[in-house]
Length: 421
Image 1 (cartoon, helix red, strand yellow):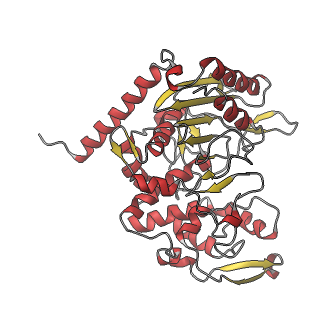
Image 2 (cartoon, rainbow, N blue to C red):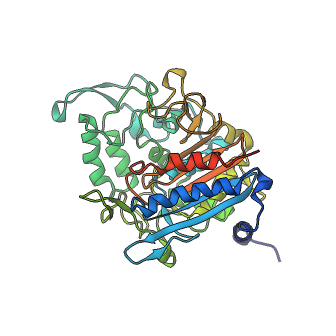
Image 3 (cartoon, rainbow, N blue to C red):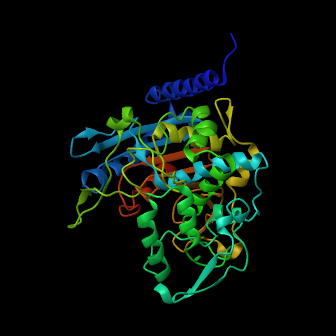
């Protein structure tokens, strides 16, 4: 009997999942020294992470380290739900927020490989609503002064955050406009969101500055316009099912709710408090619009598979998602020299497609290698991939805002100090 496409997908996903489970189950017995990692030195990382839990800054976390394709560390500490005393587990489901961005980028790149768009195409070619955009000059409210965009937003500008869109993170007059719009966008359909974004002035002339904003969300809209499918459905078809990422999606399936971590933030008195109004909703139902910039939930297992696929230049366990040169393009710096580093707080950092990339280690604040790439999420999740060291590090907790308790620096450095050969 011939195997159907659906059956092939299921078998592929099952194979990937079983391979991962086998790997994880054998972590304790695996000799990390064979991969040049000192388990004794790596233990200092676990101990350091525990201090963030012991002093009440974080409720719980999960950490993973892999080298040369082998998991050498995978542990859980603390709780996923403090109020119900539920422990962090190896299959806890997390809000990954902006760690969604590289996945959205990969989804788009599968279309780029097919010739469905070119990087320097104007986004208005595919989403006409983004033609004739305005750029903020000065003023506020109804008296805001704007000028015409001198050039179109190119698709590459969206990948690099040089398009001019904002996230409304500051108290600038323009960001106040974005904040007002975001309050209503959550319940809007994709076409309504596009129309609202097109009505807002850009923060700067396209291609001239780096400014973090809803650019990857627009990449997600591009995927939907080209494919005629909802973003999550396309991701399921070309990424999640082939790789066996069974717990990743734009909402938590009912059968997985018992594994869904709570999210915390700073309370009125500085304590760690349960959040009751989290960004992007409660993730309990399929949203009207899929947020390609920050809407996914996932697990450590799933994100490791995705990260290993990137480190393997587009392939994992015989399943190829992207070509080798495509991944190299994605993970290379594309910012002009005058825009590097992309942020004053990120010395040595350039930017690839939806991720930062190390271009100079001499000015870096942390240990690493040239070519290391990755990103983080609003609830304090993070991942980094170091091709030179064949290293993947992932940490997931649930505390908003990211960086409020800066465990990521300690995590990064205590992992790197464990590399002995």
